[in-house]
Length: 147
Image 1 (spheres, rainbow, N blue to C red):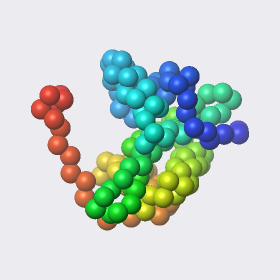
Image 2: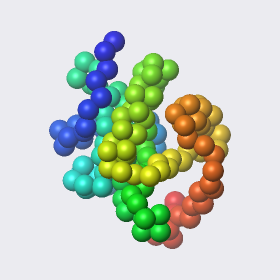
Image 3: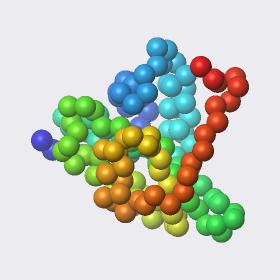
Image 4: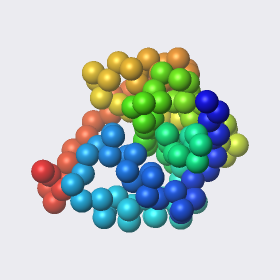
């Protein structure tokens, strides 16, 4: 199977929204569609897709933005999803490598990523690509968004 990594475009939206449901299930995809369009139009954001036979089987979202305290741009991987039937085939690694290259081209001095504490598969994948356990990410849900 041949997989091609490329930048996402608006016509990929339906496949991306559907695939993202494998990471976080939502009953109503309308807000996801709006947020995806915003990401695709945001110059700080790049979404790369893994495509096999014209079907998107994975994606990664990278944001690069200025950090004035660092004195340089930094990058954040917000999402990495590979379809269940396509896991363990190196697609996640290809997406991480492509995102890393894009971060380097945009002069990001560091790239951050987070995952659940018990997601050993993701932790292994990221550490294989040089990510280290250096910081603690704390999260607070906004009162208007709490479920």
